[in-house]
Length: 381
Ligand SMILES: [Mg+2]
Image 1: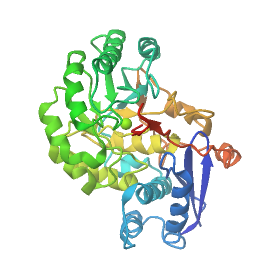
Image 2 (image 1 turned 90 degrees about the vertical axis):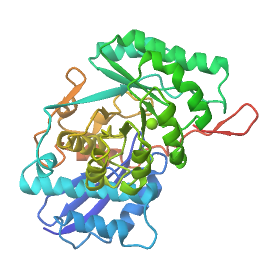
Image 3 (image 1 turned 180 degrees about the vertical axis):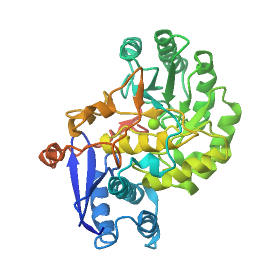
Image 4 (image 1 turned 60 degrees about the horizontal axis):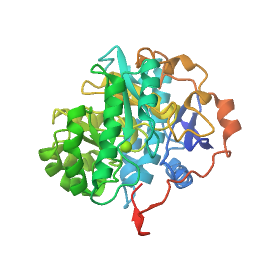
């Protein structure tokens, strides 16, 4: 079975899909995207596809090696995301060719259902109590929210009160049997995170995410040592070698992204590496249907899995939703905040190709906002 064609589709709200075609008529889908850099990754996908066209579709690992290492300059978000989407599509093809879901190829299911969380509160979180209550009403057992909007370099009493107030509102709406996670979004300095984390402890967050930017992973060990709240990170780390320092620092939860960290092939290995540190994974996924489908295949085959992020209702999904691009929406129907095991071959979803083709080119050029401090200097978003 030979790879004959690779197409890409830029679709609302801010996603990029790739479609890999073979000479036997089997088609695989992937989601290679960096949020805010869809056009850049699209170019990278088409450059990498030169390495695939005319080659055997089932040599997934060999393709991964060549796509990842067959160039002097390698790694980073753009190239790793381009590889990720193509890798997902190759696993989709393999599953469809063999008539089994990808998680069966990875050793078979290790759980019967997968717990997922929803987003609440938006970029500058407010009205959290109501938003959390709505997710509880919808059956979710966990939510995630930003800890803050723009954050000063060292939190004032008012800043800390606001962060704590949101955590308190979330805990009150959730009660003792559900969870909330807090995303610091790299908006905090390390000193600021050390200052704020103890104030969150009484509300028992599931984890605090990206308390510092990924370039400060060497500071994570100190944060882990002083934080009463479990620390998570990983959405901006793209390989085993990228995550190793975070694991050595003792993070409680690792959050690789199936569309950023080299796809199913590499996230499978990242999970295995994390297992040697007794660390569960909670894959990052504020993206579209193919990325979530790939995440679920990993979740069902990975023993050290904690919880899955998913984007339905997220504040970024302006103008389109994940369900707009799948034929069988039942795959993504939540039951008590959990997703059932997909049984269809490959990634387990049928992409609505007509909807994707119709949407191609209608995606706005989404960009992350540029924030500034009151003195006019750059502020992390
Ligand atoms: Mg995050």
